[in-house]
Amino acid sequence: MKHIILTITILLLAPLAALHADEAVLLAKIRRETLAYADALRVPGKPLGWYFDRPGKTNAPSLYASCDVAHMRVVMGEDLQKTLTPAQRRAWTDHINSFARPDGTYGPARINHSPQHANGMVIGALGVLGGKQKHSVRLYDAFDSVEKIGPWLETVDWRKQWGGSHLFWGGMHCFSMSRRCTDVWRKAVFDWLDANLDPQTGWWRKGVVHAGPFEPLGGGAHIWPIYQHHGHRFPYPERMIDSIFALQKPDGSWLNYGNYMELDALYGLAYMSSLAPRHRREDVLDAARRHGRGLVAQWPAFLASKPDLHVLLGAVGAFGLLQQLLPETFVDDVRWTDIFSDARLYQTRQVEQTQAVP
Image 1 (cartoon, one colour):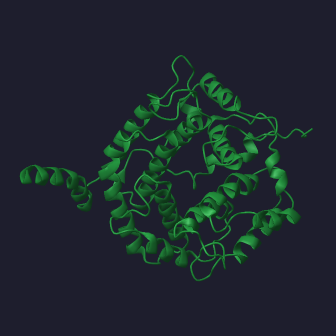
Image 2: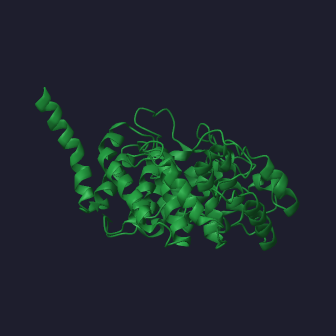
Image 3: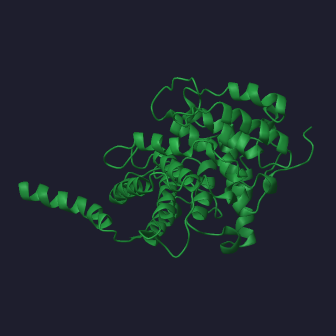
């Protein structure tokens, strides 16, 4: 029995040892496995773009699954407007728009996710497919003027901002890319956000006691993209890097491997390091290496656990960020991205309907 346990332990640790020795991780293999997993969830007899959420859950096609696969393929380096035919892209777009409601929202949304979050997922998918939303989006009306910004941001639950920030990501951030948005509006949002940062930690919101240690990380990851995509410098990148380090566990994970919190942490390290490249650079790379070892080691078990496609998207994004941080270790002949930094997933201007709302 001792010999069996020892053998199993050696096999489990082998990928960790290989990565520790800087052996390349071939992301093309991860990409093939991901695409095969998604392809197995296509709805039989339907055009490309129709997917079930996960193995065993085949009662109805899913809005999120359809968006998730479009996001994943782009994150893994694909240009869908080149690899798909116009008919395929049109069919995929039509399927997504079959979930549209007259007020411009899409549903049903994923459990525990808001109409704003669904809006963000739809904008990302339609943008890379070259499609348009079916209706004008009315949810922007709640914060579309300078006078409405502060009162709306006060409604976000900053104690539980991991989920609360979904409203910002799929709402204010997506609106910031709209034809309807103005420079004056964007400045007012940045003024509020900057003023409500804690200069000691880099977290939102100053003076708030968070409901848990990971709440501000999950919250920050959904707000940082508005800074990144509009070139507005985040004020405290060094403090943010320090705060992310403080949450990493000895095994290299933050909350759990395969959880979106891992993606959020890696995105924070990649983005904040781009603003403060000399701040604890070796520590940043070490944190990425330690996380990479664990992610590579658990990848087969993760797929075997039958994750839904939205969870799989988070893990794919983590690999994309590892390639950005450690390009000589996580290699592919295409450049991987992630769901936060890739501007192709935030093409509100291109996908929105501009006709007057009745």
